Length: 477
Image 1 (cartoon, rainbow, N blue to C red):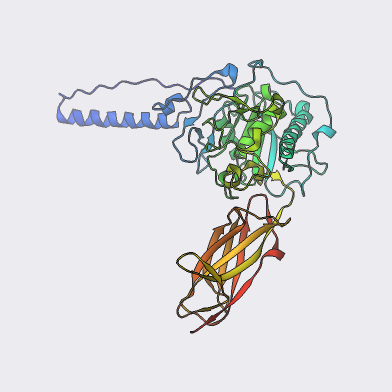
Image 2: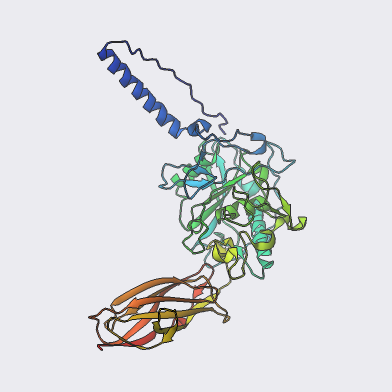
């Protein structure tokens, strides 16, 4: 592993303004050229100099706090974070920065392998083990490091399974069930890729992600859990500032990386870093530290991550240190209360990278009508050309309860099936939503229909049998 930090020499330039005009122009051009070259080198430099106006904190290698390659972010999708710039990614990755090693851990030691236990390494099987969004586990080393893949393979599988147990036991606290959806084999064992990088590939998260991308590990249906055989970090992961509650949340789009180094190999660290890749903890969470963690202990994701973070509050017992989300109000709840933060913002418990028991939802009613200026709705199934009709709908879960904050795309269709209106509505806390559509003055008369074109809510599957089609009549007068 290359541990040298890049540096730059400061060049000084002098220009004698009393020179003749020709000499002045020549020197000015040289000065501008050198200044431009210096600017480019600083922009691309993987060190604190690259962000001279807003420098990174000093490295503390003994604690795993290494900031080489990271650039303080000013992007809206990465506030209070750092950019991980890779040559083959249009959008830089975002990270909260390195997490420190636990108290008592040494700077260079690696965790000893576990006793082999195949049963303890099994995870929940899901489908063919390959298709869909999944967590890909990897053993990663630099080419100048010894290969310990065989020595640690079963241990890595056990730690991955242990991280999954933390997810499921946390889900059980809110009456649910959640498992990490791993890439696995026919025996439900996590598949662990054996990946070799260049001698500098493990030096920092930028080098690691760049080389992995070059090797093809950049799929949108994969997040990557990296057990890196190095002692640079304890753990570090990528994620985005996106608290929107729907499936198109940036943290649900894949190609995030959770790196755990050898001195911190274990289920707890793997659970912490993978939770970051799923979007926890957002900066709008009720107990945010302002730097992607929480301050209401005890909790896998909570610690005082900066001098400006709020004082820690000890709300949950210390036994909850191996569980997610103390009081389940910040980032992980399988059954959030309607109107609560996690029902209206991103909830990592609904990530597509988790195995979630099938929850059905469907439209159980569509009603057309008119609405007066005072907002009073009157149901009607016959309209004239030029009328503005109002459509109300209701969405329910498979158990008959209301489905709140579901996205429903609906269309109003003429007799020839051409679409006159399209609306995307979001159901309220009662599972209801409405939109309006003005019928064209030259519209065809006859039987029209209102249909559900699409439904979306993380963790839910649309029930085709519950997607009602409503018919109404359009007349000329």
